[in-house]
Image 1 (tube, rainbow, N blue to C red):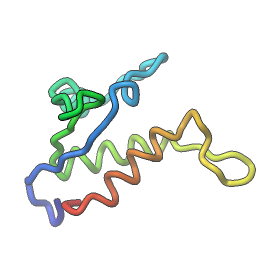
Image 2 (cartoon, rainbow, N blue to C red):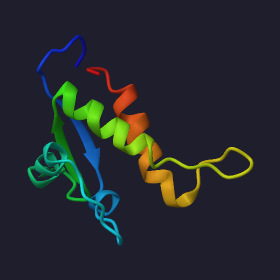
Image 3 (cartoon, rainbow, N blue to C red):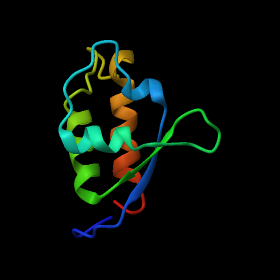
Length: 94
């Protein structure tokens, strides 16, 4: 997933990670990706098939929601966003 290739990347995501008690409006492209997410093999989460552009958009959206405390540690409320940013940035195809 680099250099503008249209290959897809697979990211595992727990359903509770993207179902928020106070849902925010997602861009249509990301909403479509989440609606099309397939259950993971273990049934505990979902597998996202993302193009480079979708992964970049999701990464940017999540990065805006990562907050830290006074000591620089990621807050529990934003841990899922930090986990997604790390998963995207460290994916071998990104």
